[in-house]
Length: 122
Image (cartoon, rainbow, N blue to C red; front, side, top):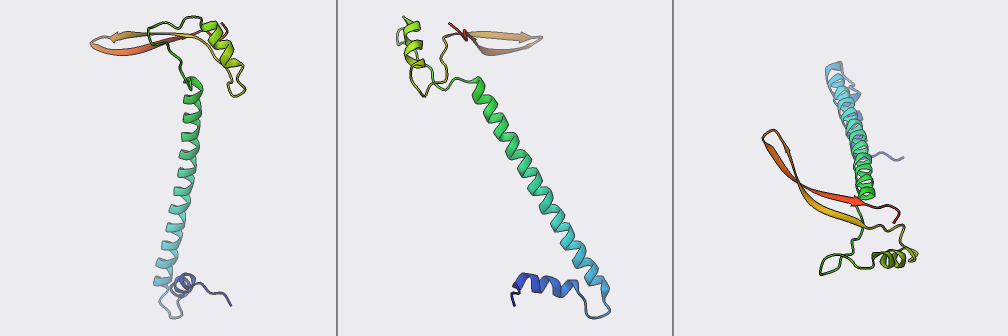
């Protein structure tokens, strides 16, 4: 018959053969406490894993996966570049954008920002 060693030791202290039922109570409550803690840990880890996946997917939806730039500044003939990129089977979409640096201030706090304007359908 299959008897795991850990189960044998655990059941030995849960089922007291003598009249000392306090040891059984303490052992049983400890087992239930550990079980409840492990269950809560598994639930929290599952929720955090799902939350992390959602944040990652939503962030990647907003960010471009690749950016093409010309060395000397503006990309000349960007319409042809967009058509070439969209003809590739692995590309879901391509769009030009303008990017500027800016400064936001509120009361005595200032922060630098990067402003990106996208033309979804050129």
